Image (tube, rainbow, N blue to C red; front, top):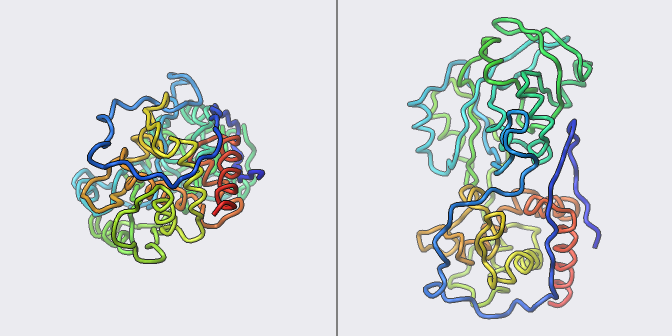
Length: 372
């Protein structure tokens, strides 16, 4: 089966991916390992995942994690440390990133821009943007970065210098274009440039809340005050299509089938294919050379955002298939797997950034589905 995926253009995108070898397909009806006997070794210090550049590349740290923003909060007044502590106590909030924000005039119009530290903020952007060292080097060199839409709407030319005005004005070279996928946000400057322009320090917060519900935005607004504007970046996670059956699955196939029900449109066969490629259904649980752990080979940084307690034992255990397999289903669902077609390919690519990996997984999934 050929794999397709949507790609987002950036000025330069350099990807370093590893091809995983896939052995002959195996059945997935073996019994589950004892949860008492195989909790897995203690979690080692995570190794960095493959990066797109060497440390110190133009003053920008390499990409070693990816964080999906679920909510964007903006405020005309600084969001201070006490407010951030309240935000951290909101149920479902896993991680936050506080940045500068404000509206600037550029070209023939205005745009909301964020003032950020390139090495930190890149992890919060779509994958194609996060991986582009050239993009983040341009930003680190105090150049302006705009979204494709913002550039097009203003008729600006990449490489030209423009007066950017807020409380104060600065001449900035338009150094890069990027997909940001943040509502109303049209561009980025560095934190130091934001101070020079007079943008509001702490005027925006990105919130990672993978377990967000319909009530999470109001809880965030309550924590930050009435002037805070909370916008969903991604739709809140839906509940499983059907109530989870009682009792734990006795085989990996049963576990894959049950986990797939968390994401309408996702086939159990896709989870089975990923389970085979990643760990041979729990037979080789790592750590991998990139630091991935457990039966579904999550990086610890990703697990902090997407790990779940799949069996109600009060723990989110990266080594436990009863937690890891449903977490994989949720991760794929968040990246569009339930839509099928190109959405599924994009979701599998998000799981492991390799086109050959996508082809291997989809071919295996087709074989599994045909054998059922």
